[in-house]
Image 1 (tube, one colour):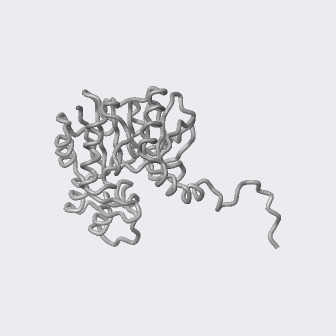
Image 2 (tube, helix red, strand yellow):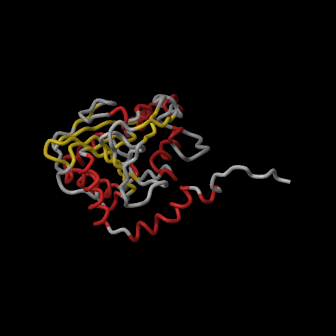
Image 3 (cartoon, helix red, strand yellow):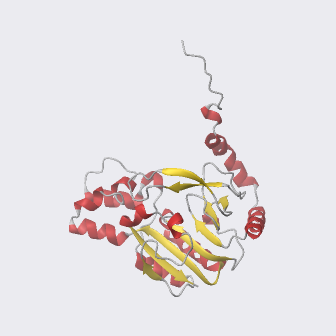
Length: 264
């Protein structure tokens, strides 16, 4: 006989994740883009938000974070009071802890392939940390053009992605250690890959994690210039004009990443 259940929490099937998994397709279909744009502009204006983190994992002071989330209502912006912070940012499985936000942040669950739901020239800085590779090349191009559109003159765009050049160099040179470090195999979602070549290919396609293109810094610089951002240059981890860069750019990805920053 099972012991009596004294746990007053909701059953697992009534978890926030499961409820929103069912509800969000309806929100996505029913909430017009114009409503999202209006509500988002209102919240950003009322909280003085001038910075944008596309695909960011957690809220950050002074930033609007737009991402696809399984635990947020689609298309309706929110203003959270807490965020998750990386405690050990250089280990394979970083520890996360909750902390209160010292300043407001706005969060939106939204599909960026439909564009950025903001007015022209309203943001002073934009960060894209490991999101561009989750889009086909054509969609990535459009997103960078959208970044240029919503950025103010003199504003900053920063991009980091898995670096094709680093992976290719390790493959050609036979650098066995590279494939065992945190930037390579642990971030590849295929299992039982027997060779460096298989891991290299797995990183490019990265099944359930949805990698759809493999970039290097040279390609991203060319795409940024194509989008109208003329001063794009390669830079280093946390070497940025964006505020709170250490909060929005995880250092444990540096082993596999490139960093590019551009101004409009």
